[in-house]
Amino acid sequence: MECTVSWTGNAGTRSGMGFVAETGSGHVVAMDGAPDAVKPENGGQNLAPRPMELVLAGTGGCTAYDVVLILKRGRHDVRGCTVKLTSERADVDPKVFTKINMHFTVTGKAIPAVAVERAIAMSHDKYCSASIMLAKTAEITTSFEQVDV
Image (cartoon, rainbow, N blue to C red; front, side, top):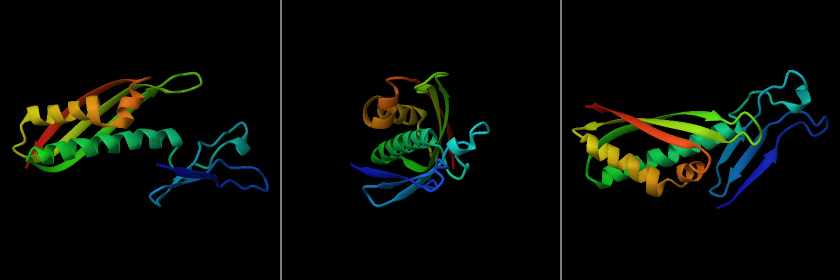
């Protein structure tokens, strides 16, 4: 796996904290920093997600992927899955994630709660490399609700 990240800031004035990542699969993702009121040249323009927001988003995508795949492989009639991640970060550098809660909403037809719980646990404990990696610094908790259609 590879990725190339390039600064898109104005090189002539050395301002701006925008970046573009091109993934090995050929996709492009923009990132930007928060504006800095004290030293504007060191801040972003708030034009794209922050890099750490993308870490959180990637983790959500990784675990939701697992949950859907595990439920489908169990022949459950899953029709939707969202996961809302809320987090806390350390106050000092490096400002790693210290707490992450993942709240899943799984939509489907007559999916047993035990199957959803098992799929989330399997993702958390075995398959989601992103959440397993983040668990080295963060306490990760999960919760879920089901919507029967």
